[in-house]
Length: 248
Image 1: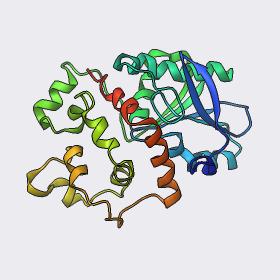
Image 2: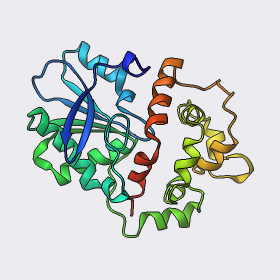
Image 3: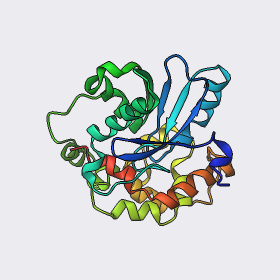
Image 4: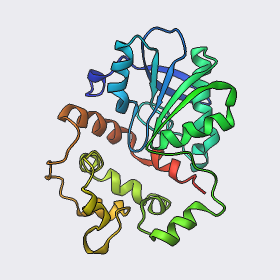
């Protein structure tokens, strides 16, 4: 049994919006469900504590591995990861469950997607909980061009646009990559003034320079880390990065 399977409810699958979506479900199938939507580089597993809390409270809750992640399909082609597909997957999950409306709770990229649901599918949304990412109107200019102008080529979202580059860098040592991302926040002084004038958004350079033997600020237990590492070693990071490649 995988490290992830030991720590999650039994995985279920739904054929939605042209993909096979893996999801985890707790609680009685009654009332309005809560759909937990993860960010990057994460999984449905990221919501393990919230699923346990919902189950203990008798609430119906679901957390899917979203398109490109975990045990869910990873279609080729950047065009398969635009907002219409990402929101359509969640509506397809509601259809599979026979549910008219749900409360959607999104973190990071999951938050960006959930904020779009009331605009694109207003009749299917009972409520939105957005964590880390606020609602953002469409920019009057190309967002990637704006980020490039302000932060330069090394800014991680700009860096992600280069085909295969970030995919290879993050996948070269998945254990190091996940340890790098899953750390406690830096002190305000360190985040505000990165060493040698570098950018706090230059994840590629920061990852390459980081010593993974530094375990002082790790957030995950060995079993939790193993769940992420096993999953991304199997899936790669390309599916998740393709979400960023649809910013324009």
